[in-house]
Length: 84
Image 1 (tube, one colour):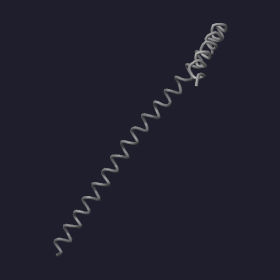
Image 2 (cartoon, helix red, strand yellow):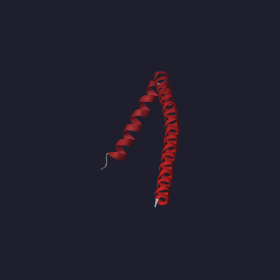
Image 3 (cartoon, rainbow, N blue to C red):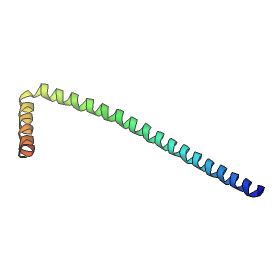
Image 4 (cartoon, one colour):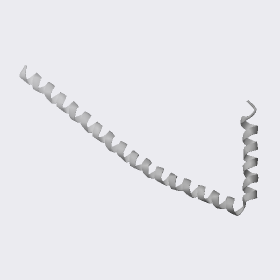
């Protein structure tokens, strides 16, 4: 009987260690993905700022063309979404 109890304890210990190892690997993987997404988020924020600045420069240099493009885009959006 003592041998069976020891085997059960060993089995429980192995299963517990496997669970801990699995959780540790999942945590490491999640951390790696978080770091990648955080880097990409910063990169995208930088791109957004760059695009906004480019748009501002375009509007300063060519205000009438920018206004015409805005009116045309508004009209197209109205035609697409306004017919509901």
